[in-house]
Length: 488
Image (tube, rainbow, N blue to C red; front, side, top):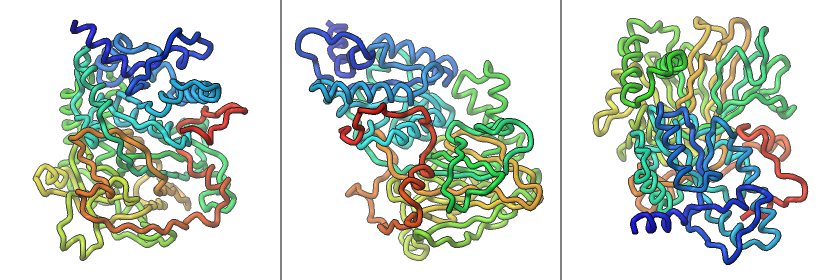
């Protein structure tokens, strides 16, 4: 009886083969309409052996053709084929295909970098109603899942745990969050290939592109431009340096990093050996943020102003969600006086503003463990720009949603530019334990919103479209004859 009841429940998530495999025969009789059809993407290399175990369990419980290993199939190709098939079936009058498209939800299991990759792909599809996404915490920090109530500990991989998670996916509410576009311009390296760029180990979320509007200030001869996006944070400085050391060590010795608790201990140890806890002794002042870069922010559209960075700040975080470094909230909740005096707001995830926070060292970061602890609140802005000129340091470290890299800095009369701007919004799935706050939630305090949005008036629609892509779904293209504008 128990197995029969379980099978009945799992029918609510099932997608039939004729939709997943083009050319398959449609079954006889009236088709059952699932309440919550899902497409599951799993990074089998995440969480040590857990990713592989989770992949096997999902394939056992669901139609194995709706469960994908990200190491074998790119998500843009999978979703491309699925939506083309759904649209063709809809045009032929298939009611089940229309219902599945309307109710579809995506589950992605992996670290924050994996989740960000999926979000970028879905954004690039440009669907009128993109499917909402639930995240399974299989990384070390798991900031994205934690922000929406999915927890931060690696999950169970047995049948009961997966069935329980799917039930939460079915009952979860949809929640919009801001997407942030990042463009980085740097001189073409003298040696090595540049697509995406061999000398650097850029994260999945940054992609080279070669066509920029002729009027764009980032379009310069001899330079390469990279674009991407993030949903949680962009950080630079000491915290990214520690993260880079961790990822480098894990890449060299993957067998040592198969357990979340072991990973977190290794991360803490590297924080000590990298000098993050004694930054004033081991970290040269020439690498403090104020010495490395000129920072400008956009408080109102089209109006840039310099942002003062205290000379002691060694790490800067541009934060979208209320979770950083494994669940800490660097922005905190400003009291009424600070809200008024500094024109600040609580950290909403859908207000078009990004929070900019600074840290002196790891000890400063530990204040986040206290109930009202927070970093140095530097600004809230609609955009932020970092300009790096020739200086004392030849490199710095950067990180996007858990993916760090070592960024070379100018060695002559050159400039590296990193510009972050609001892109749009994407739909996430949130449980009742969600920590993120919406500006549209009646229980949230009123926010200060500015509806003017004319910063891109000078660009043509074609130029704007090309610039404002994440680049995560380069292979996505609806074939001729399929009208994507009527997707519902």
